[in-house]
Image 1 (cartoon, rainbow, N blue to C red):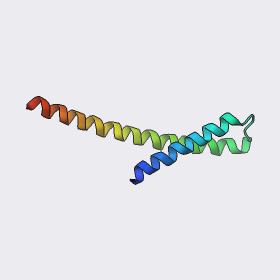
Image 2 (cartoon, rainbow, N blue to C red):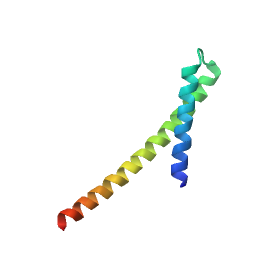
Image 3 (cartoon, rainbow, N blue to C red):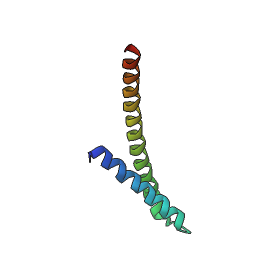
Image 4 (cartoon, rainbow, N blue to C red):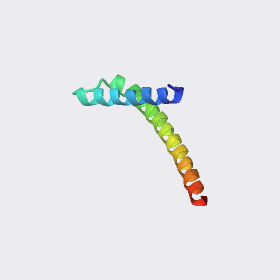
Length: 72
């Protein structure tokens, strides 16, 4: 598995864990909230960046394939 795919999976997992922790706890310790939000924001940005990179690569590939099919 590549580093970027692994990184995406790890960060997505972290987002899920934070969301679960917030959903399951009646009250969140105020001292944990800011670091939790910071971690979630960082993980979200990394996931979003990876999704955008994959989307761009797929669009480029599809455009290339469509162009070559049109020329045939």
